Length: 320
Image (cartoon, rainbow, N blue to C red):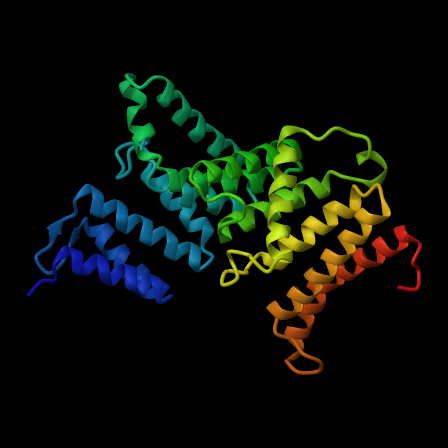
């Protein structure tokens, strides 16, 4: 007896979640090549095909086969292929693959074009040529594209553009009611936004400059996050993937723009918190753990300790 379509999709998603990516690819390739599913060879509906295409490309991404993702997307958006050029089914997967391949200019331009199409369609709701793009580029896909755009801009040293993109993401999060660091994705965005700011700062040039609206928003978010952490009231205690990095980047940003002993001391206190959280994250105690764990810890903790030393130098505390 043939499996129901829902059962087949469920099995596909299950194999993806259990990280059996090679097995998943074998099945998705067969189904997409035949354009049918099940023992009775039922033709694929448009929605089912799109779901299987996403599973296929995300399996390729999980296996770091980014070039194959690009080839698949390009092949299927060519004339008379399976995916309509106005469709947005695989745009996020394609953009992410471009980014991972280091094709930052192409990635940036691709995302900006998709965002432009979406904005144009929103402004011209009656334009049938753009209506499909507006409806299909959902919020989750748009948020993902904005993340990839910001990272590409950062890699291209377009710090002004990256800062603005991260600010737009943070504002969008506020609009959804998930602001002030109330989620692991927000922590990642805040971490990266601070990194962009830090990369564009120096102690000599940053003082006495007025912050832009974007910089103010990022700094406000960072300070709000730090207050929660200091009070032991962080909403994300169970999702700390970016927690020590948020603390470290906030402290580094603070120390670089410090104009007083009090500000520098506060930054050092935060760096001490970052150092401990880094140790906690890598679960390293004394001489326990293998060499790889120790190396990972040292690679992450040395920049924190270097900035602690910098702060102490600013205070004239050369002996620590």
